[in-house]
Amino acid sequence: DSSSNAVAIVGAYKADDVEADIGKAYIFVLATGSASQTAKLTAADADAGDWFGYAVSVSSRQDGSAIAVVGAYKDEERGGTSGSAYVFNIASDGTAAQTAKITASDGQGGDRLGIAVSVSCKLDGSSFALLGAFHANDRATDGGSAYIFTVASNG
Image (cartoon, rainbow, N blue to C red):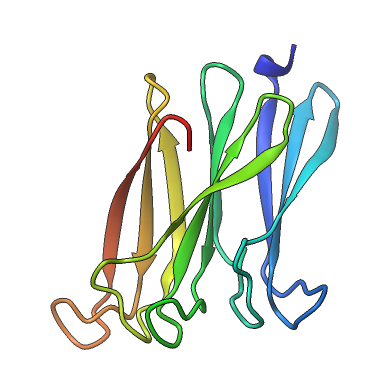
């Protein structure tokens, strides 16, 4: 029964296939006495040097599926090293699909959103993602910020 299996995620932020330091993350399903890699995650818009996978988090849902959040704090969506995070829906069989990319609405170069990530599922299947941006300038130069995002039940 896959619904009783645990899901784990491992980041490999300096991994590269085509370009340097694109990064990857790997999903493992953990069953009694064994672990099996079920998915290799990459960003749909991956670029060299993004460091996708520097921070990773996964949370299981009651139906056996899970949600994963993967940080890419060197992503340049809103300026150099503004950072981002990616949301993946993990099916109960361990397969994965990217469902969203998160950036800060007030993000700017140097913020490094996604240097720390955490995700937690609620009983209704929805999730909250908490993302750190340790160089955001909200209250002081490089004072840092934390952002909370609600993630829909389908990822």
